[in-house]
Length: 457
Image 1 (cartoon, rainbow, N blue to C red):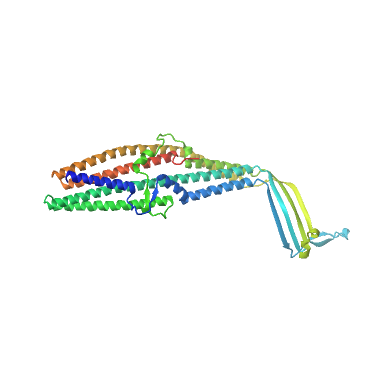
Image 2: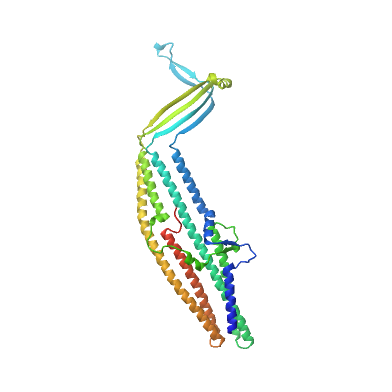
């Protein structure tokens, strides 16, 4: 190939690659769905079922805490009933007409129809276990909030990794498309040479096979983009969106510079939701044990009732409130002393064991988190070094292809050498993209290990 042809080829490849990066491989006639990484994460927070369920659990735990607190405030209830006594109650009383004979008489009392209505008051005054009960509900609420945060961390990690994968597949497709253009130009050049009897038929056949391979690779890479976009949409919770309409607005290489964080080995275990869950489990077990210990202590309640009962043999009698209804009210203190609970000691022991297990897990997690941070930092350092090496390899591969192409044009190298150089360039391009992806993934893993992937509130 002469210099003008090579220059035109490079301009064509560069123009195609710029167009690909700017618009994707989708048709401009379609209605695009632009999506940045932050938008993808925000949409996932609104649509991903796992996070929605976790937030429902938070709402439920908050209501449970509110309900527990309300359980120690005054309660006032209204009760009313109307009944028909099919058999009147019978009691045995002394025969007052013959008291010396120690005789007894059966007496029925009441009426067939009976009604009642009244207000009942109950207020706990002294209950040593009530504070522990409230604290237990509050800890459960903290656990639900922590689970929500853990689910959010998993969401951010999954969506970010999926987003990176799409960007990687798009960049790979860009390189494979450029490679296809080069193979197509090489075939045309050899066909012209063959007509001028300056190339062998085997050279044309070899170039044709190389073009078909490049075309197949481009098709596979294009299909991989759609598959990766579809997987990203599943992670976001937007499976109803057409993958062909999606266009990612963030660039692969630019994201390496945009991700800011502390790459040191210092770590705070309390930033990790998994660690906080262990600490909260200890707190919950301790609270439950205290509740069990205090559950057998005396309680004192204020109780009261204000109401009336109505009696009558017929419905017309019971409706007459002025004659057949009689008031009833009382106000008092109810003292209760639980003195026998054979299972209390076992319940306390179970909670003590749960707290001890959580304490053991806490120490193990501290060591595990320290190791994970060190491992992630090491992987990042290795990935960054590999990226530098792959960048150098890419430049070498480009230079090698240029030299061999020039030698082939002058008849000083074989076509197979040019095709081998093209394949080496393809591999170098893919290796560099993979190195970029590995750096981004390593940074993502380090942020997760440090517990800074999601901001804590």
